[in-house]
Length: 293
Image 1 (tube, one colour):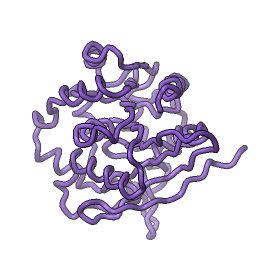
Image 2 (cartoon, one colour):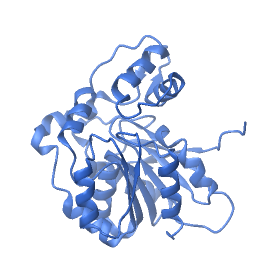
Image 3 (cartoon, helix red, strand yellow):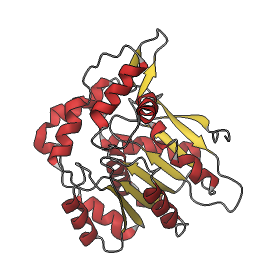
Image 4 (cartoon, one colour):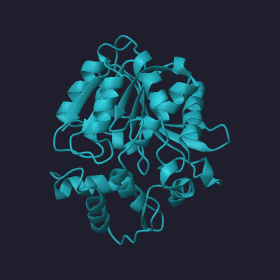
């Protein structure tokens, strides 16, 4: 078995002084191409890209997979009301400035796609192209309700077996084919063992504060103008899990109608959200990126 593709632990400072973290994968030798910045979903972290990031780096692109504030190895925010997509977008722009990156390809899973759309509105020239993973300018209420039900809620975990059982309980709808080994690996991406031995979810429970404060209607803002601006002016690929409860088939169809040139792939048997290591997703991403410079 080959050794895992290495990454450097990179830190940068947010505009309001937080220390934030990213996995920085150096590109393999070859012609320099725009780097990739990968942004995870609401309760996740940079580990979600541990399969696709090395492949992209081996293809010749630098990859920075970020831990958004309040997740993973990034600082937790003193003010939970800063856990908002526009703040996250400004954090990513700060990363680009401090890392000397003028423009990048963005991969945004779920919330990461919302951040990508917000970032495009703030600084269009920073975005070369975008891959939206199971997210659109609106979301299906049933999927949103499912995510809101567990986000920020306390969970008692006594062992890694408990952590795997929790991961399966909230995600089996998305990955019905996963084995026990898959759920154990999944748990080790979303939980972290603390110095005292406690196994805890790897995010600040207060990320849910803005969601609760916004109320149900405010949770689904109209992002269609942002999406149209992105998909009409930048190469865009939409990845959808075929049984996703967040990005419905109807929403995806309307996105395709609004942006006829947008590339599209559906990952069979997968819900919200594909891990991007699926054969269909991987092939679509590499075909898409082959045309992006």
